Image (cartoon, rainbow over all chains, first blue to last red; front, side, top):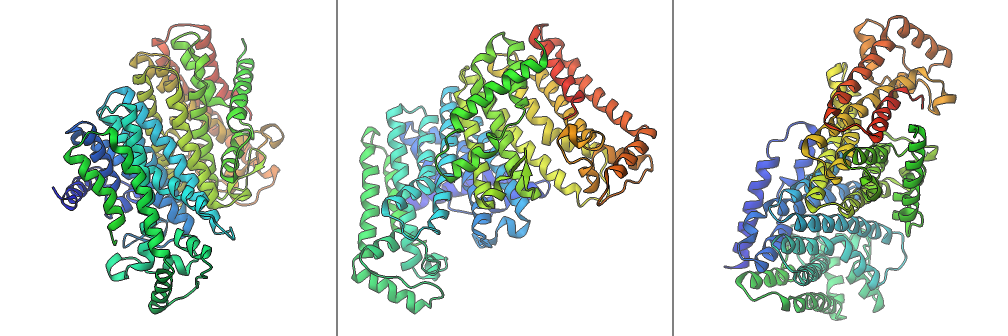
Length: 318
Length: 318
């Protein structure tokens, strides 16, 4: 099976399950909670969870939809709260929750999904011991995501951000939930600790690579392909790994309103200085350390798909 | 042992544990999370959890501090988020989190406590099955609290609120966490489902009684005794059970700025019409149904204290 086919299947299944549980919300708060969740998304964290489970025990993923929903709900909750904090008006082509309703409702909508994630996780068919370990890991992960988001916001007030700080922030804000998705899938499938840890590490590096690729997409991929507002990180003066590397090489990046041509010029400048290639190489190197952990996982079709999911994170253009 | 002595002991122990885990926060987000938690509080939910555990198995409470912290953390998280929604500037005699820091940090500070509550609960020494049931119950409870808070906010836009709606809101917003505290204590102590359910019901009714007494305190107890801003519900036109009952009797309550004498006059009016006594009786009746559930719990010193904790909720003046 091709990865693209597998991802489409998973997205279809997850969408169906989400539609079943959240498709007919009763009351304004339930509607606000369901809004982003039902607006689509690539469902990559569920895919990570399913594949990790299947690498541990073939067929285990089949029953783990409640756990897959749990990680997707946590993702959705963080988006709702982040959108309030960042005062973003749009996400996934629809108005954000606090824009459609109001901030109090958006805070509560996120809080409800947060709770429901733990409810779903407790419903996953697995041993009680596995479920406790999965809950504990998800809770630890949520605290890390919050810390990552806080660190990301504090970068705005920092004159300079080091690469170590950037990678630390990305590890927490983006990496940890991919790590938890893989590890929770493994734990619920009955993985030995050494396997669950290996899949955690793999998930973590895919998540970091994912964010670095996001930074690259923002700068290098035309809006028509990415579906995103090209150069927005540049205009906002975001301290991405590209900006940090550029600074190290003494390249000063323009800020504020920039035309497409001006963005293009910056990219060309960065390409000539080797910054783009360097950043890409860093992402590959990080992902490589994650792949190297997978030696404890027996070879299988699912393992091959899992590795290509990591590669896909670095190859995607949207 | 007197209840007051027991409560003082529990508060001391909980304060000590909180100080140990949250007393030396590292970083602004950790400080914001710890702010309200370390500012005091009566620690009534931990007391409920400990007593319920001990009624099921004498001495069980001794090891359940992690679970007691879990319910206290959930309480603290809801206060931080509620204060943002209600735009309150002060709580427990200290500035609220979003006032001292900012709204984004306050949202995250609450989210972090939310996660840590589940982490603590997973650490409680009990069977894995008991821990999964406890986590599941706490998660369901958090969703209920959010729904209750949303309902409470929506009352402001409702011309009329019925007593059924009011009691539904209070059950969710205040009752459910007391219910969960009692039930989680019981579950972790190894209670049979029938006992855990009975303690859930008891906790639920104490929580509802607690809130009704809060409404009564706001109106009838001088600020010097309650430590609260007397008559604030009246001034804000809050749809408390007292306001609802007054409306039913055709008594129109004044709103806006009111002197102490004017509040006193309203109280006298309500007392003469029998509203105050009626409301008090309702609270007693609700609590009575909870006490009636405790037949499945064997008699003990701890059960006596648990029942008096319920009574205390209705007798307290602050």
